[in-house]
Length: 412
Ligand SMILES: *Cc1c(COP(=O)(O)O)cnc(C)c1O
Image (cartoon, rainbow, N blue to C red; front, side, top):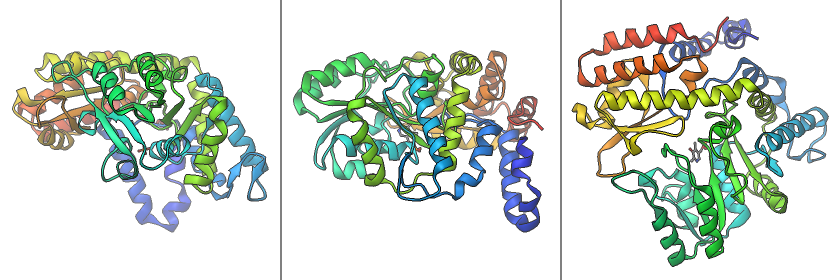
């Protein structure tokens, strides 16, 4: 099914032109500017078809074969397929595919392993920890006693000595590894060793790299972590949602932590779409994609460095890059605004040292569009030209538009 059919369905245009225009406007925005937000991607039209299917109508509290509602014979099959594909894709003994989002998956992981008041060791928020890793405005910071480890101010790399020291001092019930902004692979074996030493559980929040793991382009946390939390909509390229992987021993606790402890009815259209995405991620084409995402990120990082930005950790192992645009005379927040006006959409982030904001960007979406190394170099040059003021926002917008139009995310 072509995306135009999904988005421009005559019925929506006839019934509600106001909303039809919004959908069309967003589709045009996505296809005429450069989507460099590290957490975003373009799902396939098959995934969109599952999301827009009548499975959206179905109530299905519980798990396949044990539902609190009738009429679940088809959605049960969808969920079983999603679970089996996730287990095979990641080599996990158990998969729960019901989490509504990455944050819900983390909440369920805590519910399965912790009690309120327990101590948890996680990457501090100023260094790239997620809201669910102890932010005071999130349930995690309110209900648990978080201790934060950091990154080395010079290298930007995780300070593993500090992880070990803090673990020995605070004896956490759980250690969380995972980040919204860390561009390097994590040393899961070392985290496991530290967790074992202090008797803590290890939770890997692999929301960002799980798609690279699926494509064999990043190390897997599955053999090391007690629970792996993930999203399905980042590099993995599925529908917006969460997922949990664990061993057989924790399967029942994890399932009960998702439903009925933290969620109600499962979203069966999303679960069907997750199954479609897992099917796609198991193909050789996705393996190629995942490796191209990383190759593109390395070229983009090198290009940004050549243009004078300071790339955190000196590069990347993944799809994700963080960089300080300071040497070009602009801080991260101003840079994000200027780039948005020039058709390059990305985020700000914290930097390892000082209070200045940096830029966070990724190559998952542009790689899905079919862009390669040559385009990454073009993007690096254009981005820096806009930041230096050599190219104004009108011309930048036009150049970004031309590049995006050469690689339509959805054709037909
Ligand atoms: C994206 C992300 C999440 C949360 O995902 P949502 O679906 O937005 O709730 C959690 N943890 C990390 C490390 C992430 O990168």
